[in-house]
Image (cartoon, rainbow, N blue to C red; front, top):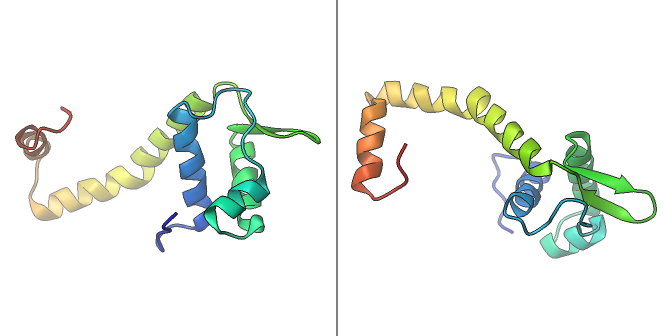
Length: 122
């Protein structure tokens, strides 16, 4: 996994694990790889992965079965989408709007650009 400097590694791992849940690779109540397995797969310190698991557990995306490991929580997909939407509206959108204003772009400009490039409609 190629890590970006702008975001802490444990949050990038949160994103990766969340993507797997949303994509249906990991289902509700299904065991997820252990801290050590994830650390070995990604080549990172197990303490970093433990921080990831703690974050996901606090967000109720995974839960721990004592002595058995971590599992995907019921409604994890919905929680991930909710968290990502909140992050988008609170953190990303204000920056996007600021950049659009600086560049003199309108929402119609974005729609036109997407239509011209065959991307999803807004």
